[in-house]
Image 1 (cartoon, helix red, strand yellow):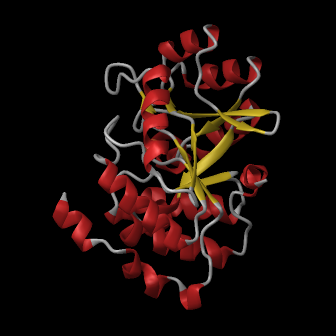
Image 2: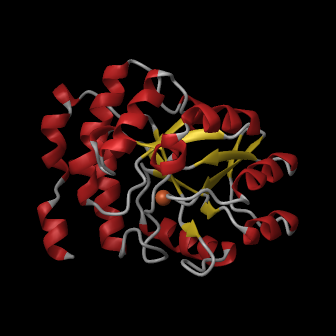
Length: 253
Ligand SMILES: [Fe+2]
């Protein structure tokens, strides 16, 4: 771990940030900064290094989205709230953290909706919930989860839509279907520069051109990803000229 931290220094990002210009949107939506609860950052030390790097890129805060994935990451909302409160005590003012979660779309999520036990981001009157689908094969419950969330008064966000193989292959089927569901689309910034290979890269760039993603996230799991993927991905986003994560501007108020 120490070698990783030593290798990454916020100033390593400097060449990617011309004349100190702010590349990043104010808020990151979708990251695994909450330490040691999933496959994300592993310690408070790593989380501090990640926050320093995000700040250098221009972020002023982040919405933390630890995995809730029964059988893989058995996190409960209570446990995550406790871990979040503990983290907040340790992080200096100047970088604002919110807690939500990244839910895997399965039967357990239907139960959580019924039990009113959902970790969401409060955004004005909206309750924003991040949901991920399986990568390779569509999950029969997936679309129903999005619809059920809408019926229960939430605004679902589909995580990293560019990474689902079946959506890449059948865009004309899936994109209208997702639009009808009312879910917002989120893409990972690193996808724009090949973090997940050529297919997600091409799809993320096409989605950006069409201005279809409502939100962009770092989906940060390791500090080194900031320098390798997030900084160059942000440069692509900035060049696009689109306003990024404008939907979250209410958070800054
Ligand atoms: Fe994630």
